[in-house]
Amino acid sequence: MNFMKKGLFLVFSFVFIFVLFLSNSHAYIPSTVLSEHGADVQSVAFSPDGGTLASAGWDNTVRLWDVATGEELMTLTGHGDSVLSVSFSPDGSMLACGSSDDTIRLWDVVTGKELMTLTGHGDNVRSVAFSPDGSTLASGSNDDTVRLWDVATGKELMTLTGHGGNVLSVSFSPDGSMLASGGWDHTVRLWDVATGVLLHTLTGHRYGVGSVSFSPDGSMLASGSWDNTGYLWDVATGEELTTLTGHGDSVRSVAFSPDGSTLASGSWDHTVRLWELPSTRVSITPSPMESPVVGEQFVVNVTITGGQNVRGYRLFVGYDPDRLRYVSHTRGDYLPGNI
Image 1 (cartoon, rainbow, N blue to C red):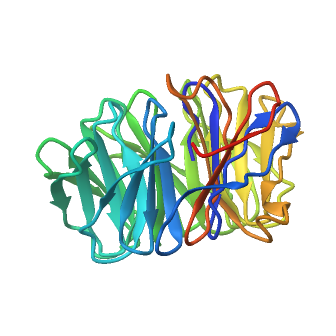
Image 2 (cartoon, rainbow, N blue to C red):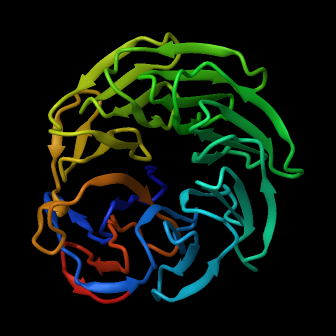
């Protein structure tokens, strides 16, 4: 889950990809089909400029879509099993994909050419993330390790060990000096990227940690867990700042707004909550998953993105096994149509 510059808001569940915009306290239900996948979608990501959407699925493919037109730009094939995570490079030129085939593949977004395959993990690659300067890729795996890779050469730079279970999420700090990892061992770990030294082990969650996200200024870290809570942590000290309670099921995704004033959390209780910071008061609980269009589905990722192509809109997206849905509005107007 991540927010980008202009506040485009993406949400998806195991079964539905749908798109909504928020206007104050109102959410709008999507009605139009954007795309098709041959199996459940596991991960989606917007390019840094908001112009391209990548979706990864159990059909072993990654698809790229034009956000303005809804046109499928290309299908990336090569993985031998389901694709679990996708991440654009900061300049938008590359896409990294982590897969159940235990590999990471890097693709040229313009040509669709596979640039390289990164091997070394001994189990599913659950999460991938580029460093802010694009030179390093981090990956988290069911082999209980975090690995750092040189993007230019594909060489593995180091393996970070210490988690006592699957590594479910990785995220770089805004300055690229630290990496956060969330694991099935109930912990969040903060690492020095240059040395690989473990800086802090953050404990408090009672179940696995499936999502970690730094605040824009790097001072706080948010984590979401299967224990139905979100935590806010002081990055410098490793101390817990507050516990976010209210979700009725696993918190699968957390993300800060670009100005750091809001935290979004997506849960298996079918809701997304927006928390005002620093008060942590719930400012809005948009519930697209409760609509009859979507049914009882789980929110597993929340992303806020933007760029020159999206004019500052806020966007929800969810998915089903076969289609992406989209709806847009401005100033609260409902404007159905393909993106």
